[in-house]
Structure formats: C-alpha cells, structure tokens
Length: 206
Length: 101
Image 1 (cartoon, chains in turn brown, green):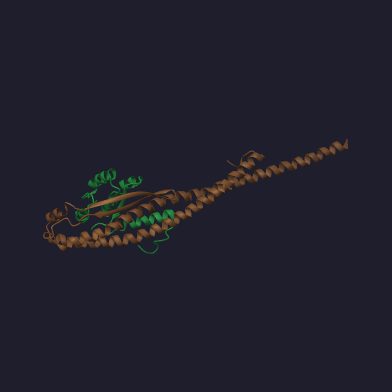
Image 2: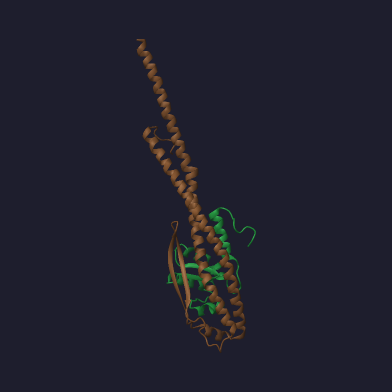
C-alpha cells in the first residue's frame, strides 16, 4: 500500500509528482466523459426520432402489402419481386469520436425498384415498395446511430469507472501518503533540532 | 432477414434478403450474412428476439452493423428498450425516457 513508503525527501518528491499526474489525468478523463456524454445524448435523441419515422413508414408499407397480397396469388407476388433490377450501393467509413471507433454508413438504392410488369401487379405493391424505399435511408441512418449509441455507452461506462477510481481511490491514497511523509519528515527535523540543542547543552556544561 | 412479407418489400430494392421462418434457420442465415461482405444486416424484430445471444456475440466486432427493424406485426419496442438500457448504463439513471414508452 502507498501508506507504507520510505519517509524520505526523494519519495515525497516522487509521490507529489504522481499526485500531480493523477490530478491531471482525472481532469482530462472527466472532460472526455462529459464530451462523450454530449455526443451520446445527441445520438440517443436522433435514434428516437428515426425509430418513430421508420416504424410508421414500414407499417404503411406492410399495410399496402397486405392489400396487394390479398389481390394477388402468393406465387405471382413472389415472382414479381424475385428478380430485382435495383441494387444497393453501400459505403462504410470508420469515424473516430474521442477514441471510439464508430462506423459511418451510407447506402442508396440505385436502379429501378419496381422490377415487375405493371399489368400483373396491383398498385398497392408499388406503394408498399415505394414506402420501403423511403424508409430505407432512415433505416440505414438508424442502424448507424444505434450502433454509435451502443459503442459510446460502453466507452462512457469505462471512462466513468476510471474517473471514479482516480477520484476516490488513487488520489486520496496519494494525498494520504504525501501527508504522512511530510509529517514524518518534520517530526524527524524537530527531533534532530532538540537533539542538537541537548548536545550543545552537554558540551557547554563541560 | 425476415419473413415473406419483409422479403417482398425489401427484395425489389436490391437488398440481399434471407427469408427465414424460425429460429434455427435464422441463426445460420445470420452467421452467413455476418461472415460475408455485408456491412449492415437488418433483422426483423421478432426474429431478433430469438437471436439475442448470437447478435450479442457478433456485436463485439465493428462490422457488420446489426439493426432490428419492426416486422409485419408492428414494433415491439425491443430496440427502444435496448437504447433505454444503454442510457441507463452510461448515465447511471434513466434520464430521457422517464414517463413515456
């Protein structure tokens, strides 16, 4: 334990430096935690809005699809959507937010999303696909934001633990050690001074 | 990944759709998708609930991003609940969702 250290000036100096370092680390980590929290909460709010949008749009899409399914045979419906003419072009980048690596996703649908003959399908299928298409961009953004929230939450937890360890364990320990050394040193000095005085008395008495 | 309804609306957009009905097939499909070249995997919420363990394991990697989307039976609020839990973990208290949801 830190409390049982040699009471020397060297040790005192070393401990004081460590304490200074710990305080600086603590301040930095605290700033990091606050900043992460800011980003995190912004992202959380973003996911809430997007979730709502996505859910509503997809719900509409499925409702339209239900009508389409009622009007078409399952085979015809499956055949209508079985050979897509569109494709998804996606790019992924990794972004570093306060040392947290967060993926950035971009994706868009290229080409014709209605790959079927208009004569064989109902208008509801068109609407369903169009709604899904509209939801797609939000879906991608939502996936990205939710992933970011997850990663940030982990990092915040880690950082908070470190801040607390410094604040409530390491820094008080160092402070205690510094104080006890300082006290021992001054005690030694006093005893030395009184010894010198005593010796002086003895020498003078001769 | 999802049932036939999800396949019908997502396939025309050019997404790689795995049509699955139940848990066992879904797990294999998810492993295949995560192992392949997909950056982003959408899973229908109702399937995702059964796959929670596999998803948790796959989330240790940065990619793919796995996202739960509401299925044909509407949203169950699983993803929302997950976010709420994460806020609680990070902040130490539920500060955003009090009252609602």
